[in-house]
Amino acid sequence: MVKPTGWTQRAQTATQAVASGEDPTDHDQVWRDLKDGLAALLHDKCWYCESPVDRSDNAVDHFRPKNRVNDAANPHNGYRWLAFDDSNFRYACTYCNSRRKDVVSGTAGGKADRFPLLDEARRVYTAGSIALEQPLLLDPCEMSDWRLLGCHQENGQPCAAGTDPVTKKRAEASIEILHLHYEPTCKKRHAAAVQLMSDVDEGKRLFELVTNDPTRAFDFKTAAARLRRAIDRDSPYSGDMHFLLRGQRSDAHPWIQELLEV
Ligand SMILES: [Zn+2]
Image (cartoon, rainbow, N blue to C red):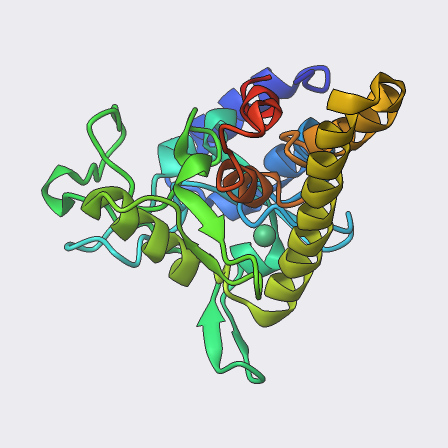
């Protein structure tokens, strides 16, 4: 990501001011200045729930909270030394970022100052390396964390993708804390799933046709390209669509596995 001119210098100055006792929020312009750049990385979708985000309803989330940490065993003043470190920034919609209740479904969520760890004993309290902390929340900036979440095809409700106890625990905690089961989000995820499954059916039908009628090859390629687009990292709900497409693999349709490997 290209940073605005002078950004690194301003981030350093703010980091020093906070180290001397100032409130990170008094320097919020520093992270706000990266918001559009972060948004552009994944085509304006929230990095957590993968919903398309209106630019007026979004935030730069600090993956490690900057002011206080709700889940810490001892009082924690926040990972203040990372308040202006762009490796700690995640682009998020306000539903994932801020605490709120959904009265219709009776669920609540929103990350706010939550940051649980797998092993609380490794919690870092003062400026220093956080390399040994193991976040419970799935991190959109980790290479493969996104693969640990999936959704139910029939209603768009999120679920853990795997059965390993630790990854399952991380997925379930993320669903809860990030409010990924927020009903309006499930509806949108479900609509994407319906489209995907219809494209899968079309792809399978055309793949079988092409075997006898090579003139249909172009139609098949077009259908396959639509599916490829749906699992592109910058498409809405691409992680969930990847999960659903993984479930469609079969010996009769090797092209699905090929799409997943691109
Ligand atoms: Zn979100």
